[in-house]
Image 1 (spheres, rainbow, N blue to C red):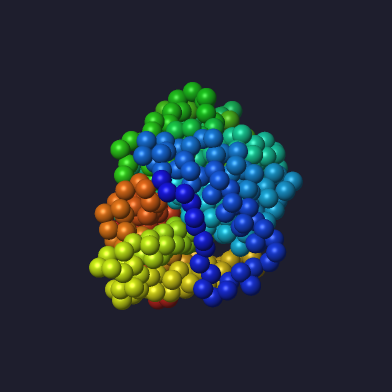
Image 2: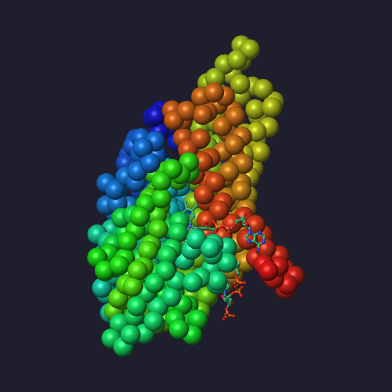
Length: 392
Ligand code: TGC
Ligand code: FAD
């Protein structure tokens, strides 16, 4: 792979709006990605393996629980810093950002928000350092966009719960130490349970042959009469709103992350277009190529402004689910379109692993599907503006 010469576009001087802390956090993440992710990521994506050696570095840049208070091992940062960390990591690879999103927003967030003080103390510090890695089990083979239909269930057996069912498409599952699992009780009410590796009847087979997010490990969570101690139930919230609340946090992070992938594609295409000569001129001199680049930077700038404002709202506790959906949907679509255009600008070279663009493009096919598909986010906006849900 080519050396990482990335220079971040900032067409509307957004850096002037960030605090000193935002810039410090972002630049530390940016340097780390250049040093520890870019040199190895293509090789790991090619062999479809998650590079476990970067877990320590992810923890050091604050990617595990950026907004979780420091007393629980988190970085105690605000939501804009969280977004900037996700942007920088996804600039390197969406699969690496996935690992961080799951650990922070889908594992640490529910334990922090819905857990007991004992659960917080037991799990959060180890998750923040990456000593323990977590996964989040909501999706099932027959219930993806409609998680409320889940069939995974648990029964009260007096001194423990008995958990049965299966989750599919679970990021980090093959190597997770714990899983936050959503299951129905005997009354059909959804609750979160923390399932630990080693519990009898719990297995995590890996899903192979992905053409997307190859540097992230994806798998199943299978529960065959797993005895879960009663103290592992998250008591703070139940019902579908509990897992959906975690998704708000992860989707917000993705709205920033996608900007990172788009920035990398744009920057690569711009550099290539200035260097690649055809018909006696750099291809950047042709109007058709300038149109592509001009549209890319316009879309990136709009996405940056959307994410920044959403970050402000999130810091104030005012960001709504529908606002988050709009940003996730818009920014991921923006990134995938830019990846496709940028890939064409590199001609044949664009399909090789010499450049990051094709890897981003393939990764973004997962990003546009997980955490709510492109269609589902449109329907969330539709329901919000009309007051009429059109999901069923
Ligand atoms: P609906 O009737 O709309 O809602 C049920 C209850 O939940 C409440 N609620 C929320 N609460 C908090 N945050 C949200 N975002 C919420 N959205 C809804 C709602 O108020 C209601 O509460 P209550 O008290 O009235 O019961 O539910 P529905 O069954 O009609 O479904 C709505 C729909 C389709 C929008 C929802 O199910 C949905 O978002 N589906 C998409 C599923 C999804 O996003 N799955 C993601 C799995 S995790 C993942 O992909 C990780 S990828 C790894 C990585 O991040 O890198
Ligand atoms: P379906 O729900 O079957 O959707 C198929 C198509 O139908 C989509 O185009 C969808 O938009 C459309 N559709 C569905 N319902 C409607 C409707 N009402 N109106 C119009 N169109 C509709 N899940 C987890 O729980 N944890 C994870 O860590 C996790 N990681 C993932 C990692 C990867 C790489 C991938 C690909 C997925 C991951 N997921 C995870 C699952 C992901 O959230 C689901 O794939 C996603 O929610 C869609 O569900 P589905 O694949 O079952 O598609």
